[in-house]
Length: 637
Image (cartoon, rainbow, N blue to C red):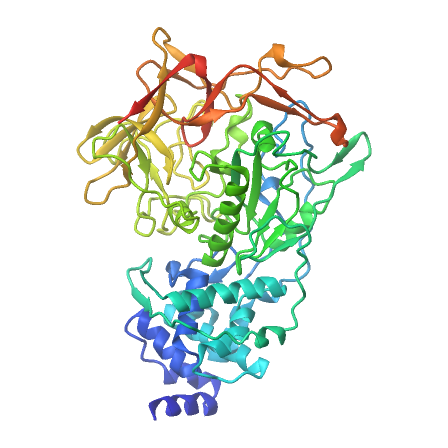
């Protein structure tokens, strides 16, 4: 009877009175889901499943996602739309080869309209009578808005408001906002997988939410066919079958002046092994970034683009070829680049579960295919890629930034970040609790760049010169030659990131010091709430008799290795060194190679290999390289 009364009220009350009829707010988020499911006749399991795929039930303190979605139901409200991409910003040359620098990218025009997938809050407001502000900031109202949308989608399909979750397959698929059938299906399948398995979680603001498993669901996929979505172009994509992936090729053509755009043909892994997968965010939205990759005059390029709302993937370049994406030609020649829709800070502070899941499956697939280790020495953020020369260190990019949840990402890959060793281990892995770790930052609002960011979950820790909270941040002489490190969200100079491993220099009480950029760097690491875990492994230190050791941004061959006609690429140390007594964790050997590719034709390209042996180390926030003959490798137990 109570359910029928609720349904009747919704049917007869005007929109202005619906909110009044629900003025008594649910006591907690679990009750908010129950109340909204009952009000709009949506199975609670479906509502919970959709919300989990969008936000993992988090409210995010009313802050927007990477594609302008708000609250547990990710209601989108894009007040502005950008045509750009992070490769447009700053001085970094995406190709990273000073022998053939790219011109600065031209300013791109903004698109004329905002897609419906970025405006779902408008419809939710119309269906519920709630204001946009309340839908953004009140989680119960936001959940009501999501439930109203699901019911609206179900009715538009002509599907019943059934208690059977399987009947809601089409409405769930539409909630993704996808225009491609494959993308909508991936989203719906992931939602129903969560429903079948069940999940319990504590949200970012301490709410306990549970979705009890509903095994043996019969998904009614005929409703998906009624959405009339376009087929996904899958010819030749290099993706696992379980995700939505389509082929949207990047432009590759000859240009005036012996130029061409905008990647290099190669024959990997036969010519060179792929050693790295680089994680970017776009600093922009999906469709404009796709268009940039189709413009042969645009300098930067990457292999895959990932959409936030539903995890859909567009592949642009075959993995055998070399994209111009990481700002370091050595890394470009040996990596695959993934661009994720969103912003490091401005306009968004979190990434959707749908995108995390899709990206993690793609990375695992690529890593297994190319033999890339699933660790933070080889799955790098763009902000972990070193500058090539002392002159390029300052201009390297900072994405995906501190709000990317590396620990969750690696769990989804099936490679969780476990502790290894006892409390006195000689090296540690940075691993703060993402949900509760909310360090101070400023710079999230470019209109007020000095203002503090809202307290946001982050995967980084601040590094200080002494073991006390008011001590100065450590310095990065490459990024700030004469100045101090900044608390800016766009400055990683004094930050260590989740999954990175560092050699321990000292311990004092609740503080741990690591070797970082040639100095001791202290971070708060109390036993009651650790921000790092033991991580025994191999470390490097200068060989006896060497006072200091140079570090490099690339592992190029010695001059004697270059054949006639291929200009020598200087092996130039960066401005950093590390001294006797310091230790740095070893990520592994680095191939001594230079890929000479300066023409449109693959036949002209060649790989120069040298005899000098290099090792990759975790030297600071970015990885760097040392010559094997300069260091001694030992086990840090």
